[in-house]
Each structure stands twice: as C-alpha cells, then as structure tokens.
Amino acid sequence: MARIGLISDTHGLLRPEATAFLRGSDHIVHAGDIGHIAVLHELAALAPLTAVRGNNDRASWAESVRETEVLEVGEVLIYVLHDLAELDLDPAAAGFRVVVSGHSHRPSVEERDGVLYVNPGSSGPQRFKLPVAVAELHIEGASVEARLVELDLSGTV
Image (tube, rainbow, N blue to C red; front, side, top):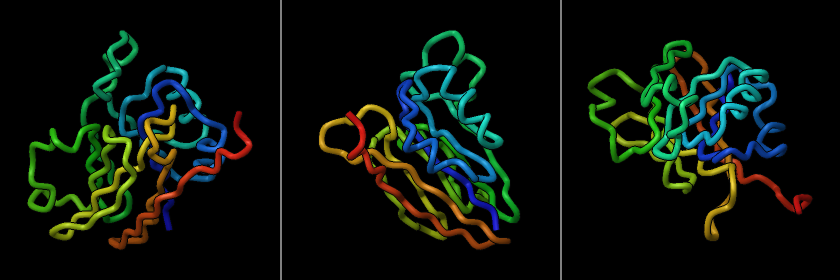
C-alpha cells in the first residue's frame, strides 16, 4: 500500500505539524500556493515530491513549477492542479481516478463519476475560521481511499 501525503496553500509556512504528518509518505503532492522555494526543498527531503504552481506563486523560482501535473501510483492516475475551477478536461474520460487541488483553503473529499476530488485545505497561515489541514491517499492497486486531517495547533503560539 502506498501513502501519498497531500498539502496545499502553505503560502511560505511549512508548519512542523504538517511536516510530522507527511513524514513517512511514499510520495508528497503540493497543490499550489507554495509561497517559497524552501517549502519545496523541505518537502522533497521527506519523500519524492510533485508540486504545482498556484496563483500566488509568482516569484522567479516558481517559473519552473508547472500548473498541472500527472502522477501514477500503482494503477491509479492522479491529476494535480491548484484551482479546481480551472480544470479543463474530463477526468473520468481521461482515465484519472483522483483530482487533487487546493486554492479554496477548504478541505474536502468528494467522489463524482468515479473520480475522487481531494482538496487538503490550507496548511499555511490560517484564513478566516477555516481549519488548518492536510490529507493523505492510501492506494493499493486500483483502490484509493482519502483521509483529511485537521492539524492540532494547540501547542503553537
């Protein structure tokens, strides 16, 4: 079984709670609004990393980060983009089992037409009253399960 750690909208803040959650992942996906190249370096030190550029990733370091990525884990194809509203293909027709996005800062898991849509939420600076969250995929063969996790920030100042 493969464990894929999902993170998004760090906006330059990679919280230790998020790092602890992602440790032990077989692969990590960052769904954009990374905020700083150091975030990518820290995540890549934990596991192989797939990342996409978000609407706020405008610095020169982000030019080499693509807007969409495709990841294949076992028999599962995963499509990654930052803003789900910019999805310009039919994931089911294209053979994708999972679409990972960010942007809204709202963690969610929803299955439609056999495609699992996962937004890990924001793990960076807290926005409004939205939770600070991450997610994971467990993949075995063609089977996929998603789990959202709200980070415990009670020890954070």
